[in-house]
Amino acid sequence: MKNLNSNIAIKISGVSKQYMIVDTNKVTTLTGLLHIKNKKKFWALEGISLEILKGESLGIIGPNGAGKSTLLKILSGITKPTAGKVEIFGSIASVLEIGLGFHPDLTGRENVFLSGSLLGFNKEHIQKRFKHIVEFSEIGDFIDTPVKHYSSGMFIRLAFSLVSNIDADIMLFDEALNVGDSAFQQKSSKKILELLSAKKTIIIVSHNLNDIMQLCSKVVYLENGKISSNGNINQTISMYLKSIETHQIVRNSKQLSPKDILRINETLIPMGVSIISIGVTQDGKIPEGAIELEKDFKIDFIFQKFNDKFKINISVNLAHMGFVFLSTNSLQSSADQVYIKESGEYSVSVEFPKFLFNTNEYSADVFISCEENFETLHIKSAFSFLMIDNLKMREHQIFSKLDAFPGPLNPIMAWEINKK
Image 1 (tube, rainbow, N blue to C red):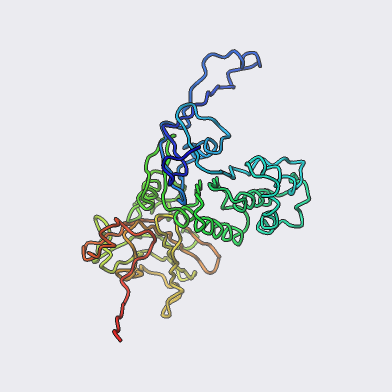
Image 2 (tube, helix red, strand yellow; image 1 turned 30 degrees about the horizontal axis):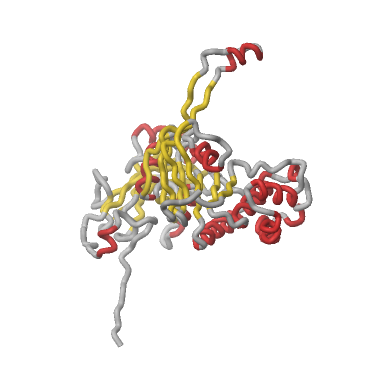
């Protein structure tokens, strides 16, 4: 298709996808299923419009059922939209859900050539890249084994390797970067960056926000089949994190609520410890709004220890945007005291220096551990806070052009100029 705008890779115009849902619990026979009248309409996608530029990396995030995989299936040509139009400018290859639709009775070698041809590449093109595909997948010893004997990790590694090495213009990856061990995951991420350097267009669907932040230049947040946010990575991911219900002990806030403390203290009985308060403070008080990055701030722990029997340690893990792990700090990191043993009421704090963090959202996991019985309480997302810059001192044109820089840290560093 001739591209009137040579910089566009994919143009999505008002795409919607409707499915019909039937309550099969109310149908007792096949005839009843065929003739049922009260089918329910379900819109998996509604009015999606996007332009994806050549060489751009787009991340698509959202909860399960938001329409992410449906959109990729439409872009891949597997599913046709109910309404709207998709224009693809260039060759396209995809790893959707659990692979490329490999035939289970064919070998890995045979599936590479079959899938490659279905993607529109001739035998010579695939043969030229076959060695790189096999080497990257790390399944050379099993390439002539039927894929029905592959593990799920081997299956998806071969699929990812085929797509990423076949030299398509546009590549789609649906939850394909979190398969295999950490070494293969790192290699896959590095491969994506190499493809972007080669001006390939990449679309990634992933629940792993680390991958999205590292690999994508733009993010689309889908919710209930519609676009809730599109563009700035930090703002879009922040909106997504605020909207989802996470499986955690407490809700996000700058302090543990009294209700949360009561529930958590029940699990601390075997350690002989009772929490009074845990949270973040600045200027000696709980801030009403955001944390100011131009000032030091502390994480404070106040608790009661009822006996001298157990050695207690406290740790805190900080995460950026509620997801990207930053660091861990523990009493055992201190040279003066590595645990608390004597009974009594304690106030413990750890201080973080000013100008360390960026203007973003952060959360903290708290761990309370007992050395003697190896018990550890993990309070996930015990509290969260937003960092803001009140100084308005960064008037350089770089800062004026961007609302916020991506990433968790943005310290003021010591620069030195020497004229020779």
